[in-house]
Amino acid sequence: MVTNMKAEKVKVYTYTRVSTAMQIDGFSLDAQKARMKAFADFNGYEIVHEYEDAGKSGKSIEGRLEFGQMIEDIKMGKDGVSFVLVFKLSRFGRNAADVLSTLQIMQDYGVNLICVEDGIDSSKDAGKLIISVLSAVAEIERENIRIQTMEGRIQKAREGKWNGGFAPYGYKLTDGKLEINEEEAIAIRVIFEQYIKTDTGANGLSKYLENHGIKKIPRQNGKNPLFDASLIRKILKNPVYFGKIAYGRRKTEKVHGTRNEYHLVEQDDYLLVDGVHEPIISENDWKAAQVKLISQANKYEHVNKSKDERIHLLSGIVKCPICGVGMFANKSIKYKKDGTKYKDFYYYGCKHRKMNRGHKCDFNKQIREELLDDAVAEVIVKLVSNPKFADLMRCKIDMQVDTTAVEQEIANYEKQIRQCYSTKGKLIDEIDSLDVENKHYSRIKTDFNERLYKIYDKIEEHESRLIDAKAKKRAIESEKITGDNIYKILIYFDKLYANMNETEKRQLIEKLISEIQVYEERQPNGQWLKSIKFKLPIIEHDMDLSLDDNTHVETVVLMSRTKN
Image (cartoon, rainbow, N blue to C red; front, side, top):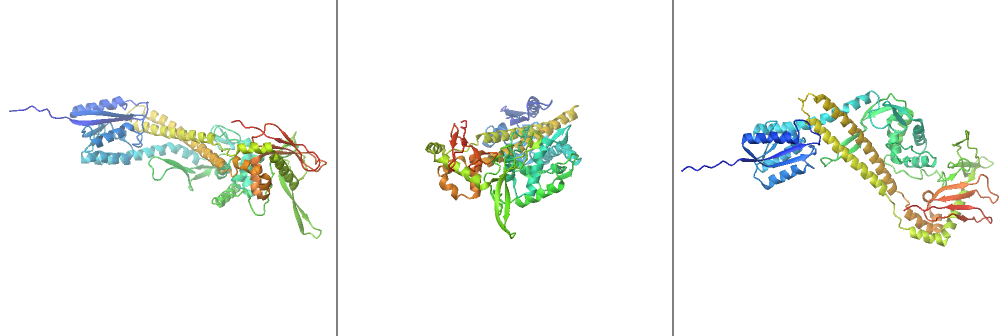
């Protein structure tokens, strides 16, 4: 007796992947599916399930949901499949480690890989070898593509030309060439001059520029009007300012112990050539700045810079009554008749930096430090002694530092960077998927490469902004005296102020007072103090306070309420 038994077909999965909604003829999802179905029909295979990932990068198996589900189904033995069909090996994954490790998992469960277009079958010894070689070659090709896209920028750098992105602060781009922006270059010159000729560090320079009314001009790639310490250090390190073009100062490197996380790392060895642009500072000044940067790299930057340097409590905060610019301390040394040193005297005076109607400020009065410092302290004591004021301050205690805005800024930049990296991966996928036999192959590849150039520029821009934003957040969080502490200190001001050192007093004054106005002439009662503008958001109206000199002196305490 003969029994007709129909042989059971070999069961297979199919997996298809394209990188974006933009399809290249011959490589669309439908085209891949059609080709694999024809292959299965020819060989008598039964397709029991089709998996597809549209718009997913092949750089890693991470993030490819359908691919991951397929592997889980294989592990569970869900359909008893013998093969996974893919159109090309590049559709399975272009990272050699991922390809080989995934293939090993599949084979552990008795499932092999067939690449239809490549004619590769991992169940055969020759197929295993070819897969190992091709997956490694694919990864090498990916790196080659990245290198090729950067060659143009490297060549421009070798020629001394600016190689992409926004012009550094102090310069502007004209027809792709760097030209000095004199309005911005003023700050660059001051930064280098003060840094190399004084003991001031980056944090001190930030305060110096603010006190001297030197603000950063907002531009497209930076809206913050202040020069923070992080930006100042970046300026000091940038060789573009002494006429050089650098390439490779920072390199994107993989985070150790991860597969797909990267970060920027400063490089000691990088390309440095003479630029075709005009320098803002001399080479000697730049080198002097680098020496100081290296010497301070592992040192704490003290507010009180040296043992012999005096802290001037109101320097920069007291304003010139003529030009309105911050006044700074001067030292006068008095000597005895025999020529020996008697005593140092300190005065606040105008540096005559601001022009009025074509002429420098002519306020030449010198105001004794102790006299003005004591007068300001007296006003604060009278202010906080007011019972109403003390009650209002207690209501403000436990005030929190709000970093919401800068945290949102950081989150936005991180999101933009992720999007850029995603777009970059997709573009590289598309380049890898191009049909070399397409008559427009060269043009299509050139278009993709140009888009890739722009993505690298965007990544660099966003990463730079992210660094600045994180530095801004750190600066906010690291403030030594928070608003909470200020209110607590003020409640017991008369007891605490006398026991503070000069650095602590200066920090308190900076947090407490916005500006101090003085008279053009010393008053008959001996006082110079005219008004104090406080930063504290407590009192809505002005207050008149008098100093203890038996004569009423108008001292206006201006305080404004901040918006919640």
